[in-house]
Length: 193
Image (cartoon, rainbow, N blue to C red):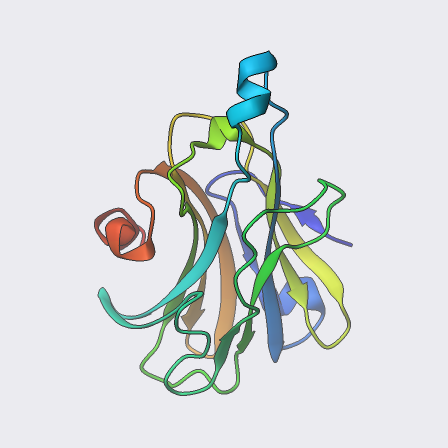
């Protein structure tokens, strides 16, 4: 059974999955909102959201995975590749990042996931956006966070997974932000580590 998370809600991944997890997938799905008005339909372009994951050691970023760096330096985190247009809003993921929790180096204690609008479109131009956490070995959805409400922001800090001792947990962040890349989000991300 999946847990629908509210902003700021935290769940233990071990308890949710019924035992320790090894492989998780953070999926991002969206579709472009329908344009309003005749002229808008002529000038509307597809929304290119980009998923990224920043690996932290304490408060310091140690590595990043995104569409131009598809695998973390240690090989524990992988990006699916860049989707430039979004989907049909049917609940399917457009981009995803898989994490092998057993291979994440001991000095990495949290991974923060974000979505940015590469073309600079705002979340007013996006609908049916969500992130979800999946047990990759069973394809079972563990948690889902809906990125709802639109807004004039161009990015969303979605969630983080955090290790305390040997147990991982997930927190839904859902914080609107401004930036077209993970680099522009670093000050906002740092406040959540």
